[in-house]
Image 1 (cartoon, one colour):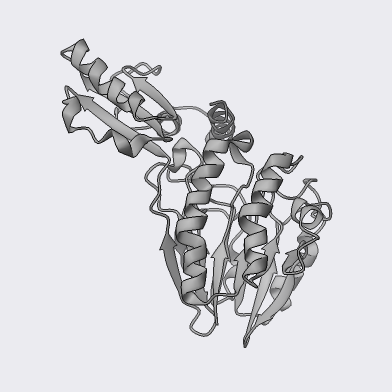
Image 2 (cartoon, rainbow, N blue to C red):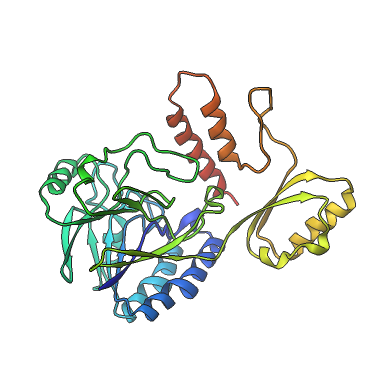
Length: 346
């Protein structure tokens, strides 16, 4: 039996941005649903953070999710198994009140897992592990210890994995309770990565600048062989261009319609030529464009800024190379949250 695994869809992201929902829809219409139909897949496992905000839902975002995702899955006869993630649990210490349970009750094909639960798919038992918090921590680890399921699928915050391509999580839960399993799959971190038997599958599409040049998409999982096949999303939202007296005639600006572009200026000998280059991007219908000609961090003999680096990379490396007794990872978490909040203001 083949099932689809998808995670961290974040419906309603970027303050219910129409730009991003249109971008998401391109993935669902051109990649996700055609793959389900081609492969004859009738089961989808959603590993958490289906909606973006745990505090509330924009009615427009809910309508978008139902019209473009859940209604279509229901019509196709696809069963959806949804794990509660930290973005869909209203309280931080319990999963009892959660967005997916409250918002999706009309769908008989959607099953919600707010507690650790074993579910059988053909001959394979899979243990679903939702977001671990104060209330369910004891029962979760007891279930992990006692279960005979060879596979875990959850929304886990484990130490030693990259949350994105630059931020290594040096805090989080210990991996040892998961060593006994043949395969452990998780959502939560948007960066795809694997180490030993643990696999973070990543999210379907770019949402923030820190997602730039990361592979996105979903996976097909074979319950007999336990193999996963990545189905990659070819569509991008963020583009970083380097201007080095580049002739505007060589630029294929059609790529940037409804996209977010950052132009890093390395060499600008003729302001008129540069204006033509930028005007060509703007005339393509770009959603947002930023021009970077200098950096706020002053370079010195101990720290050099590479113009190929984005803001989060620069700040993260600056902290890593600084001599200080502060908790650098805690500061990185604060910077990451502030940066993502700032990105939402488009």
